[in-house]
Each structure stands twice: as structure tokens, then as C-alpha cells.
Length: 314
Image 1 (cartoon, rainbow, N blue to C red):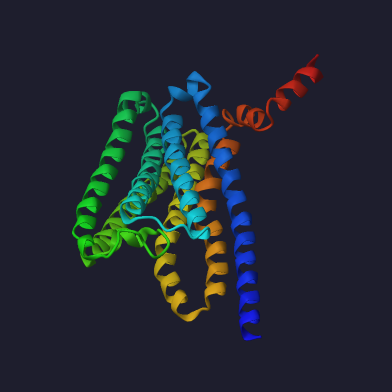
Image 2 (cartoon, rainbow, N blue to C red; image 1 turned 90 degrees about the vertical axis):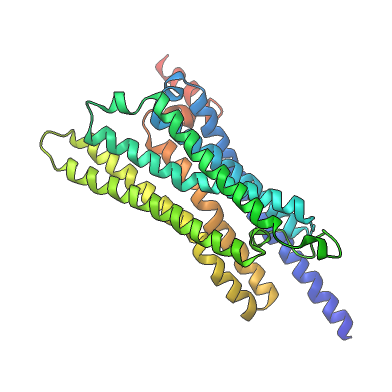
């Protein structure tokens, strides 16, 4: 009788886990589709490919899309209870480290671009060129690659040869890259450094734009839009920092909560903290930008918007 009851409970938990996985994966796929459509929109017009602010936005979208894709793969593998080997899991985790570092640094670059546009409008075209934009993007990716190489070295210090097998007995997660105390300390220091520097740059840009917006010789409308954009960057950075804050909290909750309740909580956290900041922000950018909005809406509606307008005009 007890065994039958435990089997029933286990089946119920498995069914609930499957339902939660489906409801969590669907929004992620939808957000990924939005990102791909926005990327297609940005690459479909020459003006977007030759304007620095849109090139930086494209770089941000590429990193976020790749990050969401790898995160979704890891989430599906975890829910299907597919245990990877340490080398495969480590490669996927290092890939997320690479793409997630692009997020705060590119936000800082986008804020600086808006700062120059408002505070130095006459010199904007000479300062923010396609060459300087490409150099800034290359610098960010190079910095992130160096971070990944350092993490590889730190991971190799773990005595894997002492393990009976390289196959993991748990889900693949970022703790694989933090197996040694040095690696864990490096991860903490690196995240503090990157988010602190990015936050200071964005905050400086926001204050400078606000001060310039009060000047009588400034284009008030342009300054107001730039201020709203930099504020959005600040909010995005805060949302991007939320997974770092929730990580130690989740470790504590794992020790005090039952397994099924912990899984429920992690599914909700995954959607609210991991998906929404990386998925909704690009959509907000696309819808609030007057140059991108009509093309984006046309692509989202598969061209129906333009066809309706043509019928009305004819």
C-alpha cells in the first residue's frame, strides 16, 4: 500500500514537472523567435547596418539570443534528467559565461553612445563612427574571451582524474565552473567588477544626459529620448544582475524546501529572472524605436500590416 502510494506521488511529480517544463519552454521559444525576427529586421536595412546605435543593439541581441538558446538547452536536459559528462557540460557553461559578459558591457557602450549624441552632438559623427563601434564591440568580445580562458584554466585545476567517471550524477549548471575555491572567488570578483564598471558608466551617462537636457541650447526631445534609453539600460543591468543575487538564495532554499516545491520555485524563477530580462528588452527596443517599429511590426505580422495599408491607400 505504501509502495503504491509512493509510486502515485512520484508519477504525479513527474507529470507536474513535465507540465511545468512545457509551460516554461514555450515562452522561451517565443522570446527566441522575437529576437530572431528583430535581428532579421536590423539586418534587412542598410541604414541599420551602418548606424552605430543599431549595430550595438544587434551585438546585444546576438549575445542574448545565444545565451537564451544555450540556457533553454540546459533547462530541457535538466528536466529530461539527461546527465552530461563534465567536459560537455563545462563547454556549455563556458559558452554562457562568454555571452552573458557581453550583456552588461554592451549596455555600457550603448549608454556612452547616447551620452555623446546628446552632450556632444556636433562631434557625434566624428567620435561614434563605424570603425570606433567595431573596435568597441571587438574589445568587449576579447575581454569576454579572456574571462573564458581564465575560467578554463581554473576548471582544469580540479582533480578530475580522481573521479570514477567523467559522467555527472547531477544536472549541468554553472557550479561546474566553480568546483574549486579559487574559481568561485574569481567568479564573484569578476561579476562585481563587470557590473560595477558597467553600472557606473550607465549612471554617469544618465546624469550627464539629465544635466544636458536642462540646457536651453539642447534639443529637448532628443535629450528626453536619450534619457529614457539610458534609464532603460540601467533597468536592464539591474535585471541582469538579479540571477547573481538569486543564486545564493536558491542554494539556501534548496536546503530548507521540499524537492517538488523547490522545482516549482525554480521554474518560476527561471522565467522571471532568466528569460524576461533577456527576451522582453529587445522587443521593447524594437517597439519604441520609430525607425524599427514599422518594419518590425510588418515582420511580426508576416507582411500583413503593409498589405492592409496598401489596400487602404489604393
